[in-house]
Length: 267
Image (cartoon, rainbow, N blue to C red; front, side, top):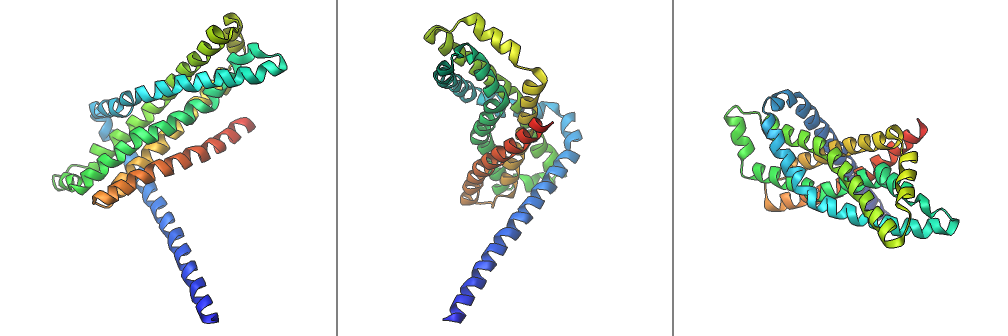
């Protein structure tokens, strides 16, 4: 009986150790791919049309889901914010609540989550399929650097597209909050905009939101690229890689949001 318990404990420790070692190995492989991407960036920027093409794929093709989601998020903020503020006689501050919530937090975070679900999975599936069909190996045989030709343009496209999408999300979200607060509820339009202009600071609020969106862009895009590049060359392997992209990106965005917010508040 004791030998059986010890054997089970040893097996459990082996599994935990294998998971930890595997996670550390994948983290190191991701960091190595990130470093190779940075080294190959100069070659990619010489073919800037590749980056522009990927910006269209990752950014423009994601606009519909981003803008529609932003409008409804802003409307919900307007309703919930007014319901809370009117209890304290501060309903005219609804514009400040909507703007700060979107610019500081919801804009960058929700945009990153939607980006990971739409563009991130598409990037992972595309890279994984290219690996499964040996297109990346064919590039290497023809003396073409697949990192510079395939990985780096998609990386910089995601980094460039994410802040723009986050800004558009915040703008449309504010419009959604305005549509609920002013025409529907009856808040004074002048008070809505004046309170917002007086209390939203470009450095403390807008710039911090842009910094968050850039960090999230680097993180989500790099995770998507690594999962596709590291995926087993099978249909099942690619499908599992796309799932890992969404899960890992979502957890990374939420964790980084807490870290960045803590740092920005303390500065």
